[in-house]
Image (tube, rainbow, N blue to C red; front, side, top):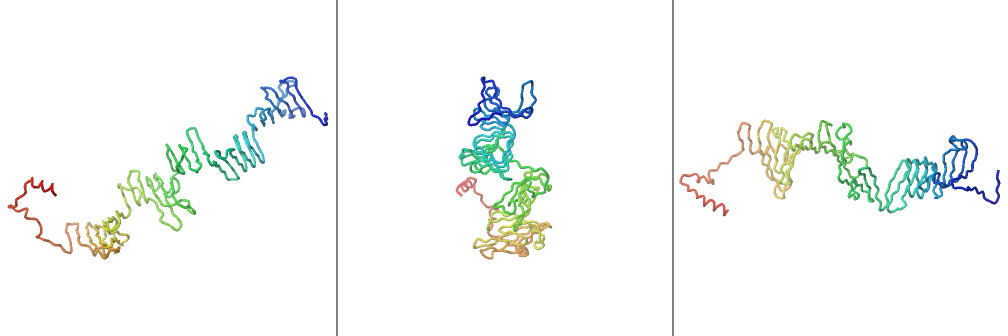
Length: 410
């Protein structure tokens, strides 16, 4: 035993290739402290343990556990640390404060605060905060139990890149793919968005839909949806549908349907014409309205469909708009027996007029039966006022030059 009081212990070597070793214990699993001073072994203080069988007489073998480099770099499990603190293996700590560079194969901590560089193959932590030293152009990452937050700083751009591209989050939160200056929440340049179904679902399901909504609270389906159907509900095309919302109702499929055959359906799937409407059609507005729709009811002699001139039918009720002075209109419809009926509805005032099917039937003025008989309440035949004189034998026709001059002048 050596006992030094008020002094130091100096162990030196006469050659740079000689190792100064302090050994504690004997046999396997003995601890050693040595000073290394060569390019082959490294430069610094090495703490290692005998955990390997010697290769020859007088030889000792082991693994470096802690290495204090002459360049002031510390290695755990390595004698050649390349950063201030480098771990060759797992790193586990209750708390970790790193202000420069940390490199490790695996890092396990209960809490970590890193403000410079982290290089690790695996990070396990109950909570962690990694913050760039440059708080205006970097980013921070924090984890606490089940919450993971990645945040870019005021002027920073956060990117995730693959071999052929990736995505970038701008400081304003916009995400860009193929661009580093996204103009919207999601901005894609030179690419597409593909939404597909992994299994057959009933129409109205959230799978494969784009959903639209305003303030989403209780209903996560939004107000409108667009989905592609490829056989679901025996439909093939793009379905514009409306989810059910509490207190609103009005949900349903096929509000608008764009078929694979390029036909358009309104209120129906698989339209059989370029435009196929299940319901009424209204063109223009006010007294200029032209309406098309169903006229099937016994009060209309079991009509099929109708054309309304400023007359729109809804469940047996007819509406005629007014322009402040007049509110009249007319209806033409066909019946199931092949008849065509013409009803002229007189004005009553300048405001909106509302009548029912039976009243429209009372206004029938002309009736064409399937056998060609034309019925009318009154027919007025006038023999005067018609230019029949041009058919007289003594009527002198004008010359073609005179007709040409008349056309040119008028």
